[in-house]
Length: 142
Image (cartoon, rainbow, N blue to C red; front, side, top):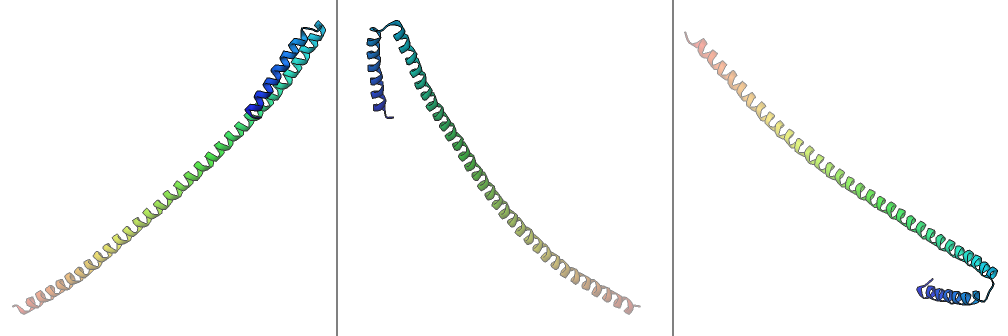
């Protein structure tokens, strides 16, 4: 119901109230009591209707609030899931970099080990040559 319609309804009720009050001045006590009972019943019916509308509005508001909360919870879950996936992706990339670095370190160590074996081979051959030369000189000297 629009505001204009509500104002029209209120004006109509005020006019009915004035008419009823004018009429009640002309009636007997029993007739006035009957009008009071009727008015109380009508007021109770209107209040019941207003209460029902208020409860419906409250239920709708509560329903909308719960929906908003559920929507917000779903959005927050999506956000946390997305953050988790990004963290996992960063963790995977970091692990891959660490593995690459470890493989490079291993390759460098193997290169060094190969160089060390080459140096050891030369050292052994030099030692054998030196020993052979020393033995030959020792055998040749009186």
